[in-house]
Length: 339
Image 1: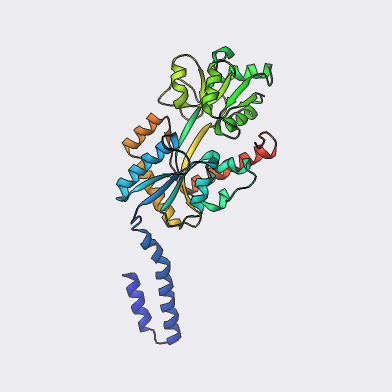
Image 2: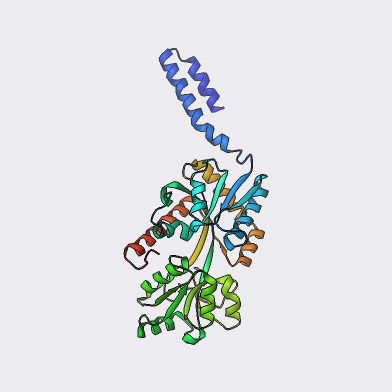
């Protein structure tokens, strides 16, 4: 209605040049508005969600649960395309090279965004400029566990023992630059202690050795340590989330244990090609929030050992940049060395 009145006003103008300028202004306004209206019908066909892991893993599971919720919400299929290999770079690069129309999305994760760029000599894309953050969708809290032979039951006891024997306590990780490794490096710096890092090729071998007493400590995934904790084979010292977990409410957070605001988590989120329009990003973000608020989705995440965490696209972009810069500092200072 407002546009029609403005157009009628333009027609009544007597000065031809003024009238032409007014009409040109109107057309410019309409052309600017057109993309938003066009995006209002998104999606009108199937959407591809790329995952950098084979089927069946934790990230793939969340991706499929999100895809199911979005399919119901949108009335269009959201299908998973698994593209493992290259530390996730293959899948991310396929996303970077796709059309920025919202029909190719990517389930990314913390180490791919913030650590892999410093692990490889050459990257085919720039994490901060070639991918568009859409929204975080969840976190996998880590849990600090100790072998019973270490004879510590709290974070305070661990710190005291490490200060008595600097560098003598071995800790395991599932690989250099992975979230458990980064988390332990940050923890050591915060606590003013020195531990000895033993990297493994995956969490399975690391778990075998901590259960066998060959290493004393590790940040592990909740899902893979819960049974061992309940059987008494591992001692839980603290969870890396900001709040206690429903699965083990008796275990304090690392923040409660003397390290305020400290987190040790892995996160997952959705990104797209860099040139995706902001209006489309906001549309997808809003729909992700709707899916994540459903009771069915939240129950699934509790069973996964993950925590639902949404937020705006700007929040997600800030998270990526903050952790990217932190990893950059760790590598440049020599605390972590490239493999």
